[in-house]
Image 1: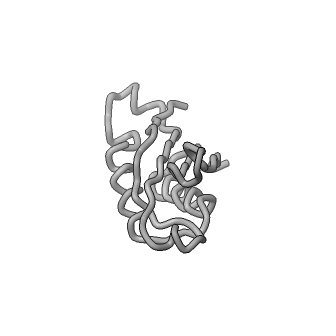
Image 2: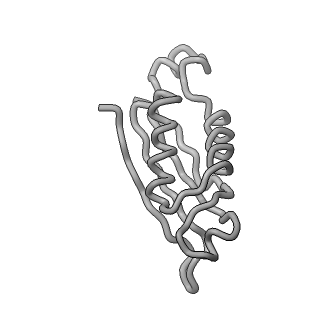
Length: 116
């Protein structure tokens, strides 16, 4: 299996349970690694892989339109998009809130799922 990765994509999203988090969108850093069919590289055909530009646009659009209480729930939502809509066989996501706590650069979660 080949993999595509998107590192440290910045996204504005509504996530959190505290009043200060619910008041305005927060900047998240999202990294995705997902499996793609081997034949895409062999055939040099974009139609046989997952277009990372489409993934980036889709994730940003979806997260701008929803509120999630937990990063875990947000992560599972994105994983669902990748598995169901983009047909990725495997995905790993890392999501971090930036500058959310004094003296802490990032706080976040990592989740890994596969179709099997």
